[in-house]
Image 1 (spheres, rainbow, N blue to C red):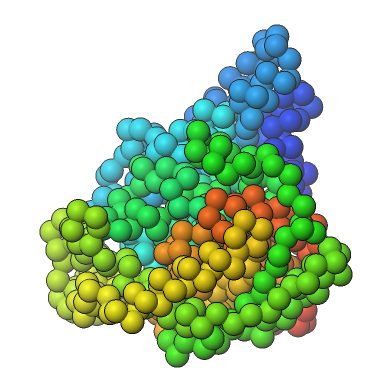
Image 2: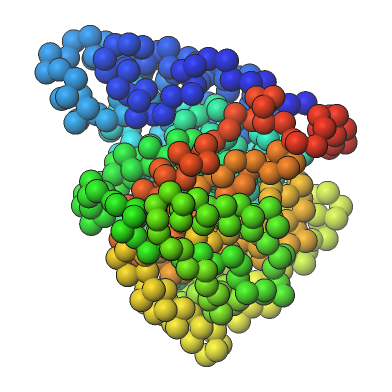
Length: 509
């Protein structure tokens, strides 16, 4: 089966434009919200992305919005200033607290947890007038790159239902990519915004560390992890990234000078085609190498800039650096909560016993989670001197390279969206995104059209700390140059290889 194409034109309008049309009474919020509800009901049975909806509450809130607009006397500008997303629907990753919605993060033991409050990032979007439609699936405890758990099942890729959506914000990636949501909230400690955005062909931004509040998510980060976790926007259209980031960052947005004009012609661009060949990771897919080359050529042709191709030797140790920093003790000397403790909600699970139960079909945990707990048993909490030196020198080199006007292009992931359950064979491939969590740099994930198989291509755009506006301006440019998100239901986006292969491959899954 394939996703049906989008037929309602309201589903093809950026959030910021929808807000304007709603304020100007060209369309009602109820019409927009209903259009998205209809689309979710049409495709969610295929992709399993939204796992709990609040449709009737959302429609009530939309009708209150329409009433407010009818009665507003101060004119459109007052509304735009105070409520920039008034009447626009939004979806939220289930790991975030959204009042009245579940917040299990895929743990069976948390199946009855319902949020009494909103996470700060969600509250800020609601305060800007956005209307949540519900919560979307994630991986168990947000620590795997496939959004699958024993509470909600598996989420599927809108471009090919036999492929994964990434994780941990995979439900968000899938629902936005399928055209059933226009903007959403994700979080990223190793690529959990960027990988799903890449696999599902949409835009996502991991802000500079410490800009957007991470409160109100489960599990809470511990040790040094609060410095690596980032909450950020996921969108189908690049022009929604800046307004969303401005809202989600609250007062901290001032540090990013998001209104400052960016002249791309004055930036210095660098392209790093791969990590230098770590033996733990898959080599980068030739189609992704090619896509990045095309971006370089386009930038040079359009902007008259020179893009410097480079190799950065420390990137080869990305996984070891991430693993070491994630398990390092915090400033208080306390080690982070182990994954095995999180799985048992404080009572440590015994991974070997869980593996045995899993083989008999009796474990309430996914194989991926059990595997992570097993790996953790053999990890030392003390990073080696060598890995620490690599991290320090990489941080220094990149900060000097990028300064306040440098932009780096880097693959998002070595592979196109893999088949379901396949990441278990390539568990370290997320290192392409994860290294930037440790470095605290802002990164925007940008789609670049579709591969021969009809799967999304893309790349990461990286800048120096607090220079988020550079990567966001580059994303706007790349959307124009490469066409941005593609409707997965449109026949124009079928794989180049004859249509019948799609049928045969989708029937086998």
